[in-house]
Length: 318
Image (cartoon, rainbow, N blue to C red):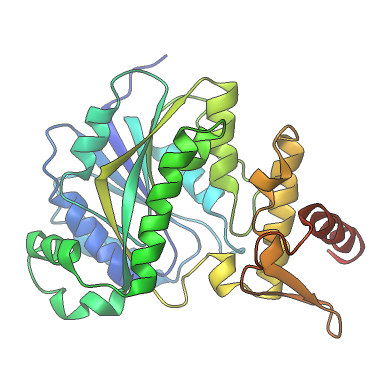
């Protein structure tokens, strides 16, 4: 295998997240990192303003910054990440989402965690609400901003979300489904020809779990999760991809199709591990359109029936 030129390639997938991208780039350029690295901004169809955000950093950066854009044809994070992989020169690939600002030691800790080949290293994300929460600090040095992000007060919902996510990841690592602990937003993996995302996923989810499952179960990768590899989650209104939080009918349908496609590739998985989100979708029979509802109480629904109804609807209308 040809030797890679750099220690690390950081691939940032972004969609119209101008302000958080500025913070991400500033943090990446100020990393306490002893190795060689590059930054690749993989744009999933943003307006031209994102390119200008990157261009502002080009001339003053000693670290290579690359930018690759693809046409806006729905949420296509899998294809965007592959665009970044195609341009990469790093031995290790670190994937960041455009709403995750890394701490200043994130790169060093990712590299140090790769103590053997075929490891998948997932870091933590600390929920910090919307980007508006830190707008008044944006003119400060990045070192001060990162300290502010670490101690920034957050609402109770964000606290619960962060605590639940961390707890579940640790539980998954001890389960037969350890690959579920690795989300694509803050995860690193050694470059290899099999490190590619499946571009058949169009719309939000679960392209990262298919990627994790395939590498771990078919190629022998070992997943680990590290609480201390930190990124700070800052949402941009209008750029939220999570179908359970901002899903329209069309986005729900794409998520359903993606989930059935994932299950078709991994039919050995229990339906509870794949279709766990489906109880939060309900069909308005008067309009024949799907919408998101609060999760029903455990034991109040038949998941198998819900999945079969969704399969029937997609076959007829999807």
